[in-house]
Image 1 (cartoon, rainbow, N blue to C red):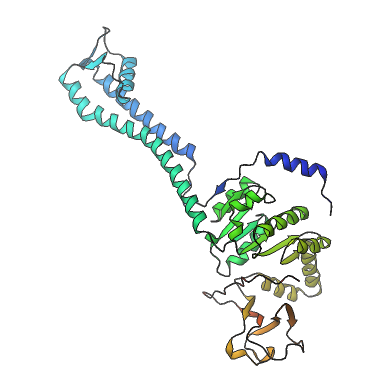
Image 2 (cartoon, one colour; image 1 turned 135 degrees about the horizontal axis):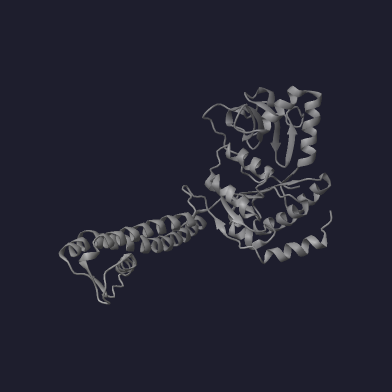
Length: 365
């Protein structure tokens, strides 16, 4: 596997431009510019209405500079009045104008100030609230799942895990593209914008407190670097990585991955199986799609199953995990099931039922 020199230089240059910001999902999203534009429009409308009221009652106002009050003077008076500047050069002289100021102009002045000051206060409050949410999120995040890369592989992987009962609040997505992180936040996942090969980016995702890490990058060399960095930060997490080329799978395992999936080979094998038997291909597709139909589940052996053979278990047993070995259901070495064994079974997913995913780190040989 080669690391092109020009790609490394380009990546290092881009790292200085990346702001490793955390983006938490929001329930209601409205663009800030749209909010400000809406408030400014209301403030402008209040200004125009005030000026028209003053102009309609212009005979009741006195201009110290002499002359009558025209439309420009009305807008001038409305501006200095609503902003509470009040130079006093134009003032209501008649009883009607003064009554209008009491009943209409003063409420409009208060509304105008509420709109402008409220916008500033809301911006400050939103920033404080966001900082508080981020601090609380960091302090409460434990045993979560970190997904590096939110492309087709990353999306499919996390949707499969969430189908078994994992909450979206326990998922953190890391990707260098801000648009991808926005899409992840829209689906309810927290996101980190940044290069996952850098330890400070993974630290922002609280990877040292994560229980499982899914690495689904677009390049094999990036997957190796991310795996090395993640394993250095978290020795006990389960790390599952995807690679394009099968020859790079051993390198991923040496880097610290518990399981490596070769995406190109896996897709090719599924294609070949579908050619030989379309029905068998459909069954395999159903097995790898969690949450509906048939599901592959790893579970512990219960006391009632101890001493039985895999064929005597009620569920359809595919394999038995004993220690560091994964044995086929018909392997003579199994003999009788033991309490410390774990079973990989095929179960039918029923509506409303949830199967807790296996969260134990897989043994690395």
